[in-house]
Image (cartoon, rainbow, N blue to C red):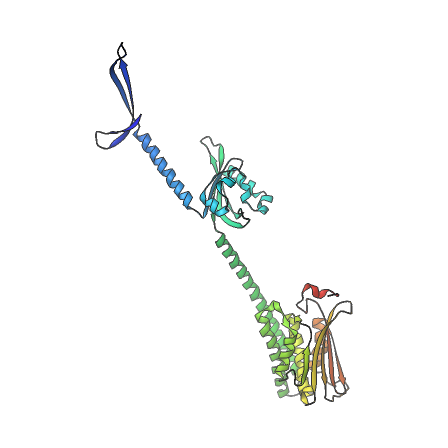
Length: 394
C-alpha cells in the first residue's frame, strides 16, 4: 500500500509497502517478510500533473473572451469550456456531439469553409480561423482564432483544438472607421468637384454679366446679385447635398433678397413640395433671381400697384410628368414687344434652362405685366424624387 515514510535525511518520501507472513506447520505466523518500493518520483510527478491540469482548468474557465473547444476527427464537439459558452451562447449539454459547423455563418457553411479549415489543419497541423461566426441567438461574432490538429504519439488524428478570441467590438469599430474614411474621401472628392464647378459657374456669370452690362456700375450691381443668389444655394447644398433644395425656399430667398414679401406686393407663393438636385437648384435660383431683379427695375416691384404671383404644379397629362412653374406679374404696364437686346437674364431663362435641365421656358409680355412659364421634366436628374413620383397615376 502506498504510504509516506520519514527519510533518513529528514522529510518524507512516498513508498509502496508490502508485507507477507511466513507460517509454521500449524498455521501460526513464524515471521513477517516486508518490502518497501520507493515511488516518490512517481507520486510527485502525478501531483505536479494534477496541479498543472488544475491551473490549465482555471485559465480556461476564466478566459471568457476566448472560445476554447475540442472536436472529434469528424468535427463533432467534444469539450466545451466556459469561454466558448460565453462567446457562442450554447451550454455544454446543448452542443456536445453536434457538428461544429453550426458555429460558422450560413454563408461560410454554404461555401464549405468549415470543411476547408479542418482539412488544412489536418494537412499542415494548424490554420488561422479569422472570420465572422454565429451565436446560438443568431447574432454574429468576429473571432480571431486557430484550428489545431490533435495527434497521438503515432501521428494519428485524435480531433481538433479550436481556440479564438472574441474581437467583435474592435472589428465593428474598424468597420465604422473604414466607412468613415471612405465617406470622408467621397466628401473630399465631392468638395473638389463642387469647387471646380463653382469656379466655372462664377467665371461664366462674370463673363456673361460683363458682356451684357452697359456701365461699370451696372456690371457691379448685377454681378453681386447673381453671385449672392448662387451663394445662397451653395450654403444649403453644403449642409446636406443629398437632401436637395426646396423650391418654395428658393423662391422665398430670392424675393427676400429684393425686399419683397408674401402678403404685400407678392400675392402668393404656392405649389406642392418639390426638391431640386443641387445643379438644377443653382440654375433655377439664378433664373428666379433674374425675374425678381427685373421686377424691381422694370416690373411689378417698381410700382405700388404691381403684384407678383408664383405658382407651380405637377402636370401628368403628357407622356412624362413635368413640373410647370409660373411667375406672373400684373398691375404694371409693360411694352408688349420682345426686348430689343437679349441680356443675361433672358438668355438664362430661355436657353440655359433648356440646355442644362432639358426644360422649356416661355416669356409673354402682356399689357399689364409679364408671364414666365418654365416646364421641367420630373426626373432624377433635376429633382430629388420618391419612386412614386414617376407614376402617372400617383
